[in-house]
Length: 486
Image 1 (cartoon, rainbow, N blue to C red):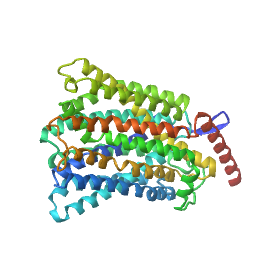
Image 2 (spheres, one colour):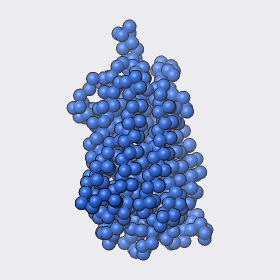
Image 3 (cartoon, helix red, strand yellow):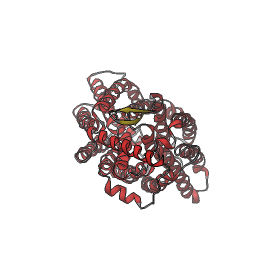
Image 4 (cartoon, helix red, strand yellow):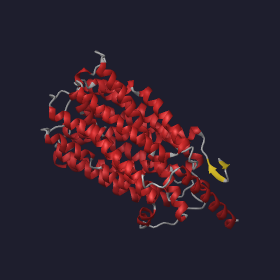
């Protein structure tokens, strides 16, 4: 649906299309959350060492980064009767489904002398599938809608879906799966993986339906056919696109910090050991959904009105304040008093502060995806090239290279306080060293990441006014192209 606004021809999507396509990210997040428990399976079930798995997962994350530019290049070259993005979405889901089911069902029973190799190969296949599907989440934003006031709607739906998703996963793992099987056993991980493959399949199907009418050439850049690009163009794009440079710095530092903070091991340490009540993890996630939901609605409305850059800066400042407050609650109070069974001032402070901090931080992390589409349009504005796959996977390449160190940071941090043969469990004893490692991972790293974001946004050029200029020029370029073709 093309709409003329202030001399700019906008390609606008229907609200249900934006909401439905956001489920593509939800589907891949289901796989991602499933794989955050792989260290429990690899060490506790398959018998691999903590340091080995922590280092290996970092290496595999780097492999994940390397596959991004290759797959982004393939997506930009793709032109089929089924579109540019739908084939990659479906292929990615199929590869991930097969690989995770094989990994969690067979790794622990294959001969010990080939177990590590088997784990690496199946995990590597999962990464290839994950990259295909996640690359489309970022790349297809550019054809879904190019209206700057509409793009933040993706963040609204994506953040809300993820809010409910992460709360449900926390409840599922802490109140159902772990108690049912007595921990993350082989049987637990088999049920876990099967359930999530089915749920991700439903999300993927809805996303494909939602992008169906937009996955056509008239919505690609200047409305022409597939752009001729070479692999070395990645360097020229990164060198010449200041917006992408700064967004990469902002997002990758945040991603490293938040992946570390939200890792399942850190959640076990925070709720299971520091607070002494791991079941509270799932309950807290459910309690904070409504306040976070309201904050997301307000934040994305602010982004639609004042632009994504301003929304990112404001939400980042508020996230820093929120996480400092979270630390003070634990440091100045008694974490063991945080309990729904014995509701008091500590419980009220934690719930209130956590709800605000979590909701605001979801805006600062979620707004990045539509900003990648802004950077892709900026590239068209600068060079005339429509390369959304290249832009999205260039972003992911650097983002994943940096954030790949999350599992290594956790592995070395817990090993430094004595956990060298197994990850911390909820039944382990509380120590001061464990408190500082937990708060450093859960609160300290995100604050450092957000500080880096604020510095990067000082040099990010795409504010509300600049984006209007970008879309106006692209609209004019498209009209000129249509005249030449006619």
